[in-house]
Length: 113
Length: 112
Image 1 (tube, rainbow over the protein chains, first blue to last red):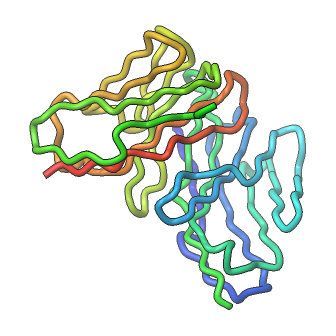
Image 2 (image 1 turned 135 degrees about the horizontal axis):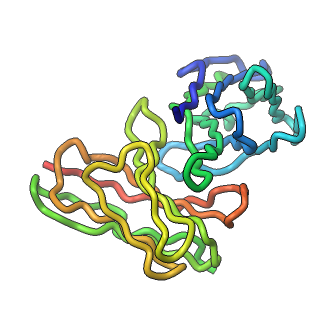
Protein backbone atom coordinates (compact mmCIF):
# COMPACT_ATOMS: atom_id res chain seq x y z
CA UNK A 1 0.00 0.00 0.00
CA UNK A 2 0.95 3.64 0.24
CA UNK A 3 3.82 3.97 2.63
CA UNK A 4 6.96 6.04 3.03
CA UNK A 5 9.19 5.11 5.93
CA UNK A 6 11.71 7.65 7.17
CA UNK A 7 14.67 7.16 9.51
CA UNK A 8 15.87 8.35 11.91
CA UNK A 9 13.09 10.25 13.64
CA UNK A 10 15.64 12.46 15.41
CA UNK A 11 19.23 13.28 14.53
CA UNK A 12 21.73 15.31 16.48
CA UNK A 13 25.06 16.39 14.95
CA UNK A 14 27.86 18.82 15.65
CA UNK A 15 28.25 21.83 13.42
CA UNK A 16 30.38 20.92 10.41
CA UNK A 17 29.47 17.23 10.49
CA UNK A 18 27.37 15.51 7.82
CA UNK A 19 23.78 14.38 8.28
CA UNK A 20 22.04 11.58 6.39
CA UNK A 21 18.30 10.84 6.39
CA UNK A 22 16.94 7.73 4.69
CA UNK A 23 13.52 6.90 3.25
CA UNK A 24 11.99 3.82 1.69
CA UNK A 25 8.86 3.64 -0.45
CA UNK A 26 6.60 0.79 -1.50
CA UNK A 27 5.25 1.74 -4.96
CA UNK A 28 7.68 0.58 -7.64
CA UNK A 29 6.00 2.98 -10.09
CA UNK A 30 6.91 6.05 -8.00
CA UNK A 31 8.91 8.48 -10.10
CA UNK A 32 9.24 11.69 -8.09
CA UNK A 33 10.88 12.14 -4.68
CA UNK A 34 10.98 15.59 -3.04
CA UNK A 35 12.47 16.65 0.27
CA UNK A 36 10.97 19.41 2.40
CA UNK A 37 12.36 21.41 5.31
CA UNK A 38 10.04 22.78 7.97
CA UNK A 39 11.19 25.29 10.53
CA UNK A 40 9.27 25.70 13.76
CA UNK A 41 5.87 27.27 13.17
CA UNK A 42 6.41 27.57 9.43
CA UNK A 43 5.11 25.76 6.38
CA UNK A 44 7.17 23.02 4.69
CA UNK A 45 9.40 24.27 1.90
CA UNK A 46 11.03 22.27 -0.88
CA UNK A 47 14.80 21.98 -0.60
CA UNK A 48 15.58 19.44 -3.31
CA UNK A 49 13.84 16.84 -5.43
CA UNK A 50 14.82 13.97 -7.70
CA UNK A 51 13.08 12.15 -10.49
CA UNK A 52 13.47 8.47 -11.21
CA UNK A 53 15.56 8.92 -14.34
CA UNK A 54 18.59 10.07 -12.30
CA UNK A 55 20.45 8.47 -9.41
CA UNK A 56 21.84 11.55 -7.68
CA UNK A 57 21.31 15.29 -7.54
CA UNK A 58 23.31 17.95 -5.75
CA UNK A 59 22.65 21.55 -4.75
CA UNK A 60 25.52 23.11 -2.83
CA UNK A 61 25.65 21.33 0.57
CA UNK A 62 22.59 19.18 -0.11
CA UNK A 63 22.42 16.01 -2.16
CA UNK A 64 19.83 13.32 -2.73
CA UNK A 65 20.51 9.78 -3.93
CA UNK A 66 17.97 7.33 -5.32
CA UNK A 67 18.17 3.54 -5.54
CA UNK A 68 15.15 2.41 -7.53
CA UNK A 69 15.98 -1.28 -7.23
CA UNK A 70 15.96 -1.13 -3.44
CA UNK A 71 13.20 1.52 -3.42
CA UNK A 72 15.02 3.90 -1.15
CA UNK A 73 16.36 7.43 -1.33
CA UNK A 74 18.46 9.52 1.00
CA UNK A 75 19.16 13.15 1.84
CA UNK A 76 22.75 14.13 2.57
CA UNK A 77 23.65 17.45 4.18
CA UNK A 78 27.35 18.25 4.40
CA UNK A 79 29.09 20.88 6.56
CA UNK A 80 25.99 21.30 8.69
CA UNK A 81 25.21 24.68 10.20
CA UNK A 82 22.91 25.65 13.09
CA UNK A 83 20.41 27.07 10.60
CA UNK A 84 20.01 23.56 9.16
CA UNK A 85 18.18 22.65 12.38
CA UNK A 86 14.59 21.84 11.37
CA UNK A 87 12.27 18.95 10.61
CA UNK A 88 12.92 17.29 7.25
CA UNK A 89 10.31 15.31 5.34
CA UNK A 90 10.77 12.96 2.43
CA UNK A 91 7.90 12.16 0.07
CA UNK A 92 7.06 9.95 -2.88
CA UNK A 93 4.49 10.10 -5.63
CA UNK A 94 2.04 7.19 -5.62
CA UNK A 95 0.68 6.17 -8.99
CA UNK A 96 -2.57 4.77 -7.60
CA UNK A 97 -5.35 7.28 -8.05
CA UNK A 98 -4.07 10.57 -9.42
CA UNK A 99 -0.39 10.65 -8.47
CA UNK A 100 -0.85 11.73 -4.89
CA UNK A 101 2.16 12.73 -2.79
CA UNK A 102 2.72 10.72 0.40
CA UNK A 103 5.10 11.95 3.11
CA UNK A 104 7.34 10.21 5.59
CA UNK A 105 6.93 10.90 9.31
CA UNK A 106 9.79 13.40 9.42
CA UNK A 107 13.26 13.72 10.96
CA UNK A 108 14.04 16.36 13.54
CA UNK A 109 17.61 17.50 12.90
CA UNK A 110 19.49 19.42 15.59
CA UNK A 111 22.85 20.96 14.70
CA UNK A 112 24.85 21.97 17.78
CA UNK A 113 27.45 24.76 17.57
CA UNK B 1 0.68 36.99 -6.60
CA UNK B 2 -0.47 35.56 -3.26
CA UNK B 3 0.29 31.87 -3.95
CA UNK B 4 -1.69 29.58 -1.62
CA UNK B 5 -3.93 31.36 0.89
CA UNK B 6 -5.50 29.55 3.84
CA UNK B 7 -8.12 30.96 6.16
CA UNK B 8 -8.56 31.10 9.08
CA UNK B 9 -5.10 30.90 10.67
CA UNK B 10 -6.49 29.73 14.00
CA UNK B 11 -9.82 28.19 15.00
CA UNK B 12 -11.28 26.72 18.17
CA UNK B 13 -14.35 24.49 17.87
CA UNK B 14 -16.48 22.59 20.32
CA UNK B 15 -17.11 18.91 19.71
CA UNK B 16 -19.92 18.46 17.21
CA UNK B 17 -19.60 21.86 15.56
CA UNK B 18 -19.03 22.16 11.85
CA UNK B 19 -16.75 24.46 9.92
CA UNK B 20 -15.01 24.94 6.60
CA UNK B 21 -11.30 25.57 6.13
CA UNK B 22 -10.69 27.68 3.06
CA UNK B 23 -7.88 27.30 0.54
CA UNK B 24 -7.42 29.54 -2.49
CA UNK B 25 -4.62 29.67 -5.05
CA UNK B 26 -3.84 32.07 -7.86
CA UNK B 27 -1.21 30.00 -9.67
CA UNK B 28 -3.65 28.15 -11.94
CA UNK B 29 -2.53 24.83 -10.46
CA UNK B 30 -4.70 21.85 -11.31
CA UNK B 31 -3.67 19.77 -8.30
CA UNK B 32 -4.78 20.83 -4.80
CA UNK B 33 -4.57 18.84 -1.59
CA UNK B 34 -5.14 18.93 2.15
CA UNK B 35 -2.77 17.50 4.75
CA UNK B 36 -2.97 17.34 8.50
CA UNK B 37 0.14 17.51 10.63
CA UNK B 38 0.31 15.93 14.06
CA UNK B 39 3.44 15.61 16.24
CA UNK B 40 5.50 12.59 15.24
CA UNK B 41 3.20 11.64 12.38
CA UNK B 42 4.38 13.84 9.60
CA UNK B 43 2.04 15.17 6.95
CA UNK B 44 -0.90 12.88 6.24
CA UNK B 45 -2.97 13.36 3.11
CA UNK B 46 -6.70 13.89 3.75
CA UNK B 47 -8.18 14.58 0.29
CA UNK B 48 -6.88 15.85 -2.98
CA UNK B 49 -8.13 17.08 -6.34
CA UNK B 50 -6.68 17.06 -9.84
CA UNK B 51 -9.09 19.58 -11.30
CA UNK B 52 -12.54 21.07 -11.00
CA UNK B 53 -15.06 18.34 -10.30
CA UNK B 54 -12.43 15.64 -9.53
CA UNK B 55 -11.55 14.67 -5.97
CA UNK B 56 -10.11 11.57 -4.33
CA UNK B 57 -9.42 10.30 -0.85
CA UNK B 58 -6.00 10.33 0.75
CA UNK B 59 -4.67 8.43 3.77
CA UNK B 60 -7.02 9.83 6.43
CA UNK B 61 -10.28 11.00 4.77
CA UNK B 62 -12.80 10.05 7.47
CA UNK B 63 -14.59 13.00 9.05
CA UNK B 64 -13.75 15.37 6.21
CA UNK B 65 -15.50 16.38 2.98
CA UNK B 66 -14.17 18.31 0.02
CA UNK B 67 -15.43 19.68 -3.26
CA UNK B 68 -13.75 21.42 -6.18
CA UNK B 69 -16.09 23.64 -8.13
CA UNK B 70 -13.38 26.01 -9.41
CA UNK B 71 -9.68 25.74 -10.19
CA UNK B 72 -8.87 28.35 -7.53
CA UNK B 73 -10.67 27.02 -4.44
CA UNK B 74 -10.57 23.75 -2.51
CA UNK B 75 -12.46 23.98 0.81
CA UNK B 76 -12.20 21.32 3.51
CA UNK B 77 -15.35 20.70 5.55
CA UNK B 78 -15.60 19.21 9.01
CA UNK B 79 -19.24 18.19 9.46
CA UNK B 80 -19.06 17.25 13.16
CA UNK B 81 -15.74 18.14 14.77
CA UNK B 82 -14.07 15.69 17.16
CA UNK B 83 -11.10 16.22 19.51
CA UNK B 84 -9.11 13.80 17.31
CA UNK B 85 -9.28 16.42 14.56
CA UNK B 86 -7.19 18.85 16.58
CA UNK B 87 -4.25 19.44 14.26
CA UNK B 88 -2.50 21.82 11.92
CA UNK B 89 -3.99 21.70 8.44
CA UNK B 90 -2.03 22.56 5.33
CA UNK B 91 -3.32 23.13 1.85
CA UNK B 92 -0.81 22.43 -0.92
CA UNK B 93 -0.96 22.81 -4.70
CA UNK B 94 1.10 21.94 -7.76
CA UNK B 95 0.90 21.78 -11.54
CA UNK B 96 -0.61 18.60 -12.87
CA UNK B 97 2.77 16.97 -13.59
CA UNK B 98 5.10 15.72 -10.87
CA UNK B 99 6.33 19.13 -9.78
CA UNK B 100 6.92 20.60 -6.30
CA UNK B 101 4.09 21.24 -3.89
CA UNK B 102 3.46 24.80 -2.77
CA UNK B 103 2.11 24.98 0.77
CA UNK B 104 -0.13 27.52 2.41
CA UNK B 105 0.72 28.87 5.87
CA UNK B 106 -1.56 26.43 7.65
CA UNK B 107 -4.62 26.52 9.90
CA UNK B 108 -4.24 25.55 13.53
CA UNK B 109 -7.47 23.88 14.67
CA UNK B 110 -8.34 22.97 18.24
CA UNK B 111 -11.44 20.94 19.06
CA UNK B 112 -12.46 20.91 22.72
